[in-house]
Length: 123
Image 1: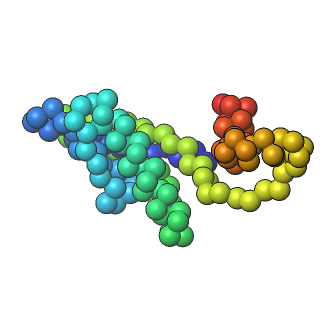
Image 2 (image 1 turned 120 degrees about the vertical axis):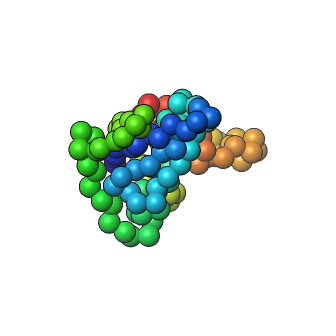
């Protein structure tokens, strides 16, 4: 599921940035450079929303970025994440016996091979 939230970037005197999310009280991070800050904002948003989902809390609606008021050199931008449900599920699959024997003898993880193949197919 896609989520897009406004983040406020607060420049610090040492060139780093502090990031806050007005709609997600307590979701705060920092970055050493603007590029690093973008990465950290993405990571913080993803982890925060995963936590809310895992605990069964409501995920608040995102405010329009134009409604975010900043001051000084602060600026607001949108951060997008795609929250996939990455927990494992069991599936029954059938493969020829000779393939199963070769996989076992080679120490190959069928689950990993299937995941890699499906990822290539979908990406």
